[in-house]
Length: 275
Image (cartoon, rainbow, N blue to C red; front, side, top):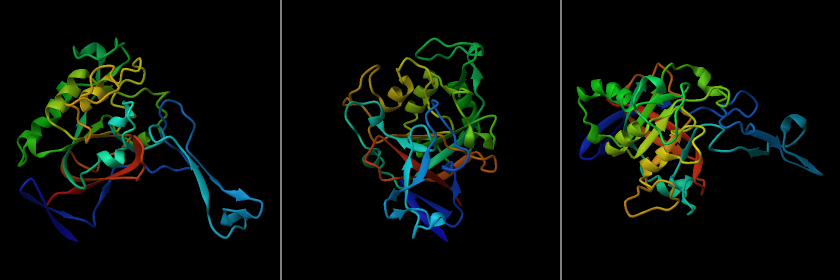
């Protein structure tokens, strides 16, 4: 099924029967990605004195209780409510059904080999997604039929890239994170929807500053309040996985989320190749 869609006065065509799913399925009975060393996501049959929600144990249907932490147990999309006192729902913030998005692959740089910075002191083991690496990845894009200003979404795939990301325990293998300069570049590009294959755009241990989140949403350092210049309709999606068969380039992004009235919700970002 070929669908035509108009965005910002331009017509884009895509095949709706060929979606490219860049979410990580959350397997309650198998391997899972895990951030910050939290408990694994679980699913257990509900039981009462005269009912069991498991057909394998004689129940009439499967009826389970699921326990998980959206920020840590898989692909999720979060709103500015992640860092504010006001409980702002991602369901209310996400207003775009389809956006034009660009997928780039970047090689993180060792903190000792770059002059880019972060909100806390870096050590020699830190890996930074730098402004320089993003600009390098966008060079080919500058020669394409699109312009940066056309894009509301940016998808950042880190290298090396393999499917171990679908079950990685990030407390054992600390993830790369964005430099302050890289996040300022993304803000300058007016990106509304940022998707990354790491558990956070910030350093795992950052003294609670979440500096990159604040830059992206334009919330003052250390503040937990929106201001007149903040961007509450921007979203951040973390813990995606974009396999190598999905090439760098322009896509239509359909960002699907669970209708949670919460600062974060499980999500399923879908990409469509543009014809």
